[in-house]
Structures are given as C-alpha cells and as structure tokens.
Image (cartoon, rainbow, N blue to C red; front, side, top):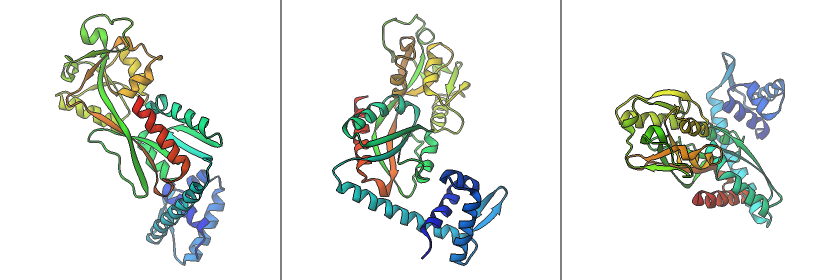
Length: 314
C-alpha cells in the first residue's frame, strides 16, 4: 500500500505547482519533500514529476494518484466529521476566509455568537479575494470560505466542494449626492435613494472598480457597456469600502452591493451618497463553501447556521 503521507505531498505539489511552494505550505524542508517523492516514485515504479521551467509538471500516473488521494482524504475527512458529531461539545479550530464586505458585516457577529455559545471552539478568520477562495479551500488552507457570485458571473464549480447559499445582496449604482441630483446632500439622512437616475446618465463620469479579472469588475463593465458606454476607470481597487468613500467625495461613481454600504456606515459619510436602483434589480448571491467530506462537522454546521442568521438580518 502506498504511503498516505507521501501521497499528500504529491497532492500538495499538484496544487502549488512546485516542490518549494508545497514545502512552504506544509512547513517542510524542500529537500525533504523531494526525498519523500522520490521514495513514492520507487513505491509506484514510475516517474511522477517532470521539470518545467522553475516548477514541475505531474505525469499522467501522478494525476491518477492525486485523483485517488483526493477521494481518500475526502473519506477520512467525512469520518472525522461523523466522529465529531457523536460528541456533545463543539470544539476545535475552524479556519474561515471571507471577502471584504462580509468581514465588515455578517462575519463578526456570527463569530462572536459562536464563541459565546461554544467557548472550546477557536475561529481563525482571514480576508481573501473571492476568486482565490475555492482554490485555497481545496488546498486545505481554510475549512470554510464565503464566496460571492455576480449575475451572469458564477463561480466555477469544483468537485469535492459543497456550496450552501446564505442569501442575496442587492447591487446598486451609487453617486455623489451633489453630482447626481444637482443639490447639496441632505445632512442627517443615512442614504439618499433616487429612482430617476439612469446608468446611461453617468457615461462621462470617472468610475471606481475592482481590479482586472475580478468577477465584480467584469459584471460592472458589462453593465456599463449594456447601458451604451465604455466606463473610464479612474480608481482601481479591491477595497470596496474605499470605492464608497471615493463616491462620497464626488471623485467617482461605482456599482456596489448593499453590504458595502452597510459596511461603510460609520466610516464614510453616506448622507453624501445617492443610491439608484438598476434595471432588473440585480443581486449577487452569497454562499458558504466547504469540502464535501467536512460538511457535517459540528463546528461548520454551527457556523453556517450563525452566518445564515446574520445574513438574513443585514
């Protein structure tokens, strides 16, 4: 029988693309990883890795092994989840990754609730770009990832990942009050709402958008083009709260989700912003993603329930 430890090393190399990256992810010495994979090649009796530039490429035999290793790891993870479910205490360490607006809104109260209810549960939270979430989950860097899907820009579905929808988040055009309405902002109002303003009215304005390649950026550009113009991107940032601030100062327009406006409260003068509804009232979908084998782990079940509760109240 092949060594599971060595098979895990091969799987890490397939995910990371090089021996050095796999070693760093696992906290090993690169020479140790190389030695263990040479031993695995001896066990299998065939070549598993081929050098390509500064990295390595898996042979067909190695790809077969990695596929079966994924299945074995999934079964072991499912066994761990079932055993944990037999206990009455939710405990352990749960590593969570989320995109910015979720970290500003729904994640903190959900984590606080769990830590109050389950003091033996430790939750480690990290910020991650939405596009990086699923690869990091499959690499076992995290146990649960919050992801966002924009209209006509769904996340790629991956084998071994179980998705559970938390809710939807309306998407809006936001503009500076003075720019949009031709009047000074009404101080004291939390946020102004305009039904009159059209996206096509903003063709000559500078825009704040996420970085190239982000699904939010692709969706925003598509909406502008559908309205008949190519947007002039003056500010490119993955910090959506910064986008809201730029709009409040009259420096740009933006298309943002409702949670971005909620997350900006107390940080940005939202009374200086006009929110306009878009045609069809588009929404993004917010979901949690976990590895299929771990979906019944009590800590994950509890966190998903808490996140769902707070998503509904936002």
